[in-house]
Image (tube, rainbow, N blue to C red; front, side, top):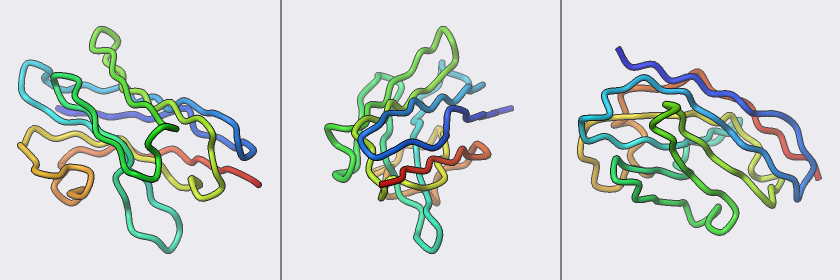
Length: 125
């Protein structure tokens, strides 16, 4: 059974940093893709960053150079290091995973099967 549990959200001022964590239980012997998505009130869910089994990473243009995704399989944990935060980064952040081969995973949130409960990030100006 796949489980994803996020933590690390909070409130920071613009320019600050936060690190999100997602403890996962997935079969890492299979090909998989894990991603961070976010959804702000009144907006559609958007992909932020993703990483595959071979640690290849993808980033949304809006976060390139500011956010870093990483995973530690020994700790079964996915991370999202967020630096230089902006008020527009305010959203609920979700960890997601799937075993399907996705063409453009950060734009295919609807194709992800497994989701965490989310953690809130609030950035004040």
